[in-house]
Image 1: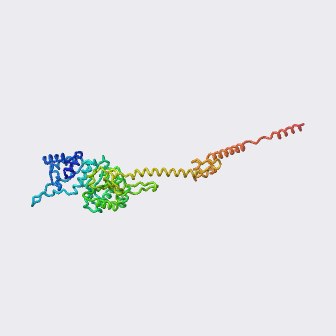
Image 2: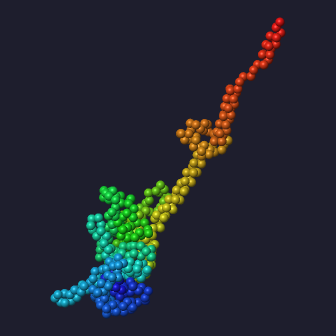
Image 3: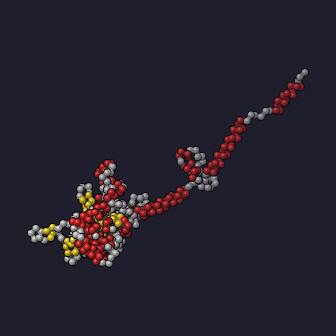
Length: 418
């Protein structure tokens, strides 16, 4: 209870029930606990809403106890709400629980009730400083890795802001996600400053957002959710239409740069902000774990994890690229076989080695008859070598003696001797 009030500052028993004991059927045990904490001067009632629900806050003592529980876990404690009185009338001031703050806490309560985030995984009013010094504060940040949502930023809108103001918020989150780390290499910083688009070549691990939040487990920047509260469907539809059209540059995926544009239909989400929208009334009626989330660029509502997933993203790209590459290799192989020359003597196709010998410039001059295959060429070479060896042997052999002539001459001489 102290932890929840330390994070959200103010809450009703109904909200605290969903944030601390969502398994209970009602908030009676929560109300009993609040009364017990009140007896120990840890909490107090700050106001009573129009629906007669009490708004509870921490006392100074309770705030100190909440700090002990939260700060060792690295969780920032919300500011203490001191009692302030009108100096003239003596009336307690600052007791209003504005509807926006109530909607933020109710959104967190519904997420927690659906198992999306532990109460210690929520933070409110988290600042994101841009390069120009502007700080964009998220109404709510949830970390729920066990639910498939390692991190998500939430903006709660009660239609008090113009739709184009929401587009500006989306743009600022997109810009924040493109900032390099403060300790990035000087060459990287200079390149990004001179050509902002160069940040797309910088891995997400080298960007500022990865020093603040864990990896999302999906392509793209930190997911962003717009939750609309206390409004009608027509206004929500109009706002979403503006977000989709005017904010397309920030949430829309791109085509992959591929050698097979006809075969690869996957989309590149790496530089996009995944944006989902829903209404607080839907979360309260159906539960945050139901199909009440719509991803910009898609039709129909999905569960949160399904809406954040990219079934047409990188995994599909890898599969399509591999299939297209395999098909291209088969086509090239078939084309090569169709072009493979045939021996004019035996009619067999050339082997790869012989084909290369007859076509490569460095080898063709010594390939002999380029219209015959390697076997026939080898036979020709063998015959030529045999004939050459025979010729050499014949040229090197001594001439045969003329025996008859020598004998004849000798006999003639013998007969003429005295």
